[in-house]
Image 1 (cartoon, rainbow, N blue to C red):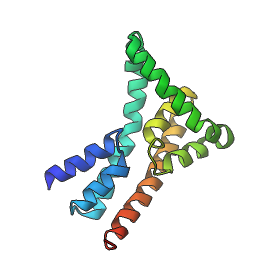
Image 2: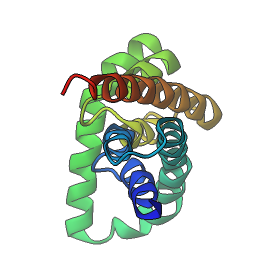
Image 3: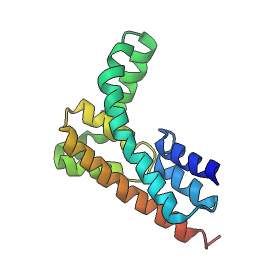
Length: 151
């Protein structure tokens, strides 16, 4: 049980799944559904401050390595391309809408990178990300929880 809780947390923290993977993992491993929601949501919300710290303190020194710089530029271009229309038109609401879509490439990692690239106010961007993450987590939790009885 502790192993499944830890994996639920780690999947929800991971850029390879976020809560979109953590929630189904926890629910399909018979953990308490409400506890799964809280663990996954909490871990996913933690991503934003971790990413801001990384982008502010660690990203810049790493840019001197060519392999990292190429990868960072590729990620930045994808984040800008996928999110620019939402932010220009809707601002922080657009950020929340972008993050809340429970599809790959639309989570808090890209939302954090977009916050950094577009130089958005951090407190408002954190709130927008948290709202988007919460709505996305509710969608994923509901589909997984209520869909379990179908199979």
